[in-house]
Length: 210
Image 1 (tube, helix red, strand yellow):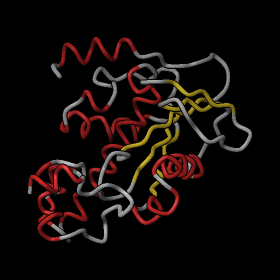
Image 2 (cartoon, helix red, strand yellow; image 1 turned 60 degrees about the vertical axis):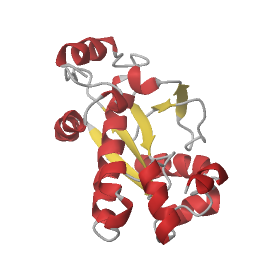
Image 3 (cartoon, helix red, strand yellow; image 1 turned 30 degrees about the horizontal axis):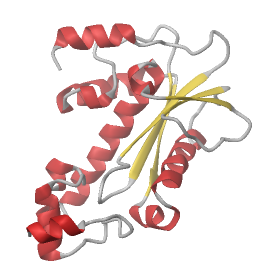
């Protein structure tokens, strides 16, 4: 994404859902991966927050996300990250794990929000706090966009660490997503302790290709 386009996208973001209360944006990263945890972030931004690159983390380059992360963490009123392991994902399923990761992030916030802005169309209610599910919210609301950047960068950092234990799977580059190269290694060497065993690690049609 070019800098001009990033400026345009950032200008489209809405800072607040409502003028009253304390709003926290929530998003997760890693739902579609074959390995590693699902990671969620919760972010409360000040009313004057702005960064020209801020938008949905998927629209940003790795270097742009890495530049945004410290800015968000420094300028946010509060932020936190929640992690749900691959073993927990296998136990409770990825949808519930995504909700749990968001709840764990919210548990750690130093400020209590009065309203939650959730990326997506479903959420498990968190206590008695009002929440709003916003489809593609990471491209609409600043707090959700900020949460998407933190969730993605913290998860990528996690995958870089476990790549040192199991470098053959290429997690340094694929971050656990189901690339052809990733699946070929699974076919050749089997799954690692970090793989989600309830996921289709090797769909039948790909097994035939190998």
